[in-house]
Amino acid sequence: MAAPADTRYQANFTKGGLMVPESRLVADLLLQGVDAAGWKQAIVGDNLLRKRSPTTASTKALLIRARLRTMTADLWRLVRDGDRPAATQALFAATMKYSPLVGDFMDLVVCDLHRRFEATLKPQHWDRYIEDCHTRDPRTPHWSAGTLSSLRTRVFGMMTEAGYLSDARTRTLRSLTVAPTVLDYLKAHGEDYALRCMQVTRR
Image (cartoon, rainbow, N blue to C red; front, top):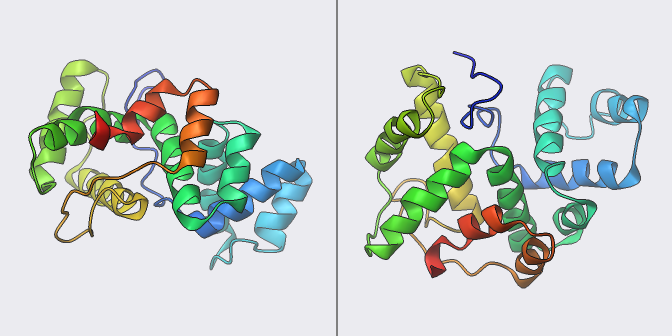
């Protein structure tokens, strides 16, 4: 079921995780300021992302671009040029801004788990969170079981990539220190929501 355009919660991250290597390449295209023709040539013609089909390449590239465009060129540089932890965290910040379904989960659920000294993130934490989303925003779609499972898998995977979970199987919660370059960017650009979501282990 498609989400209304004005709903806070959308299933707009089922097509990929954080995709750090691909995001570095897309960030470089954005920093170069390529036009539509240059974009198509790079993504489809040159297969910059090394995907099996033009459709997959375009889908992944558009998702990454949409995430990155929630932030400014300074963050794109962090993604392109930063070390792996900083680039990953920068991408996670942009993802949470683009997908509040991810951000609010970190802000409301994961933060609370840390406050209560819970050791493990469980599937039912996500399931209850989705139920609560319908209370906070009645326009939230009623997704199929398959979509909900895909969303949960993606979120847990991204959290693992970013360093908030030990791994996607045991899902042990980890305390994370945000990279100084990412922290400085979020503070300097007034990205209070993303900053709050990133600092769930320190509140």
